[in-house]
Image (spheres, rainbow, N blue to C red):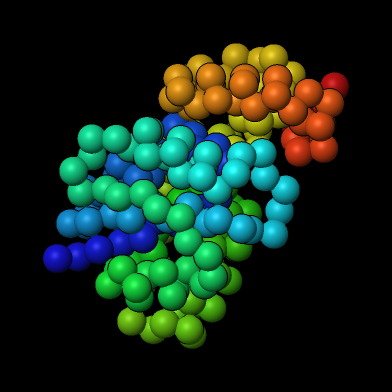
Length: 175
């Protein structure tokens, strides 16, 4: 049975992530969507919240499981018996970063391939950061994330109040 790991912070999961997961799940017998628990960046949702959002988004997919992990992605891939690490590419800048990561992963675990899938054209612009910015500014994100993520973002931003500004930096949606 061929297994692949699709890692990410998924803060929150978007329709772009779901697009990549769906296509990867068609290529492999089993896909593990691996939610990185403690990245070195400011996150809006806790690891458990991100896990639950991703699980709900991918619920009912028979060959997909969602779980959290810490440490090296190649170690997670080895633990799961994965033959591949899946990454999505949106723009040219993604390629440079993913190429560097793929080479490092190959150095650490030559038996695990890096497989990059090009994002569908309707999601080229989409990132979790942009979704959070638009949500914080009361924009419509209903076409960008599943409905339960829209609700979770609204609730989290309301819950955090002024602190949401510390966790969601407005970078791309200025003026």
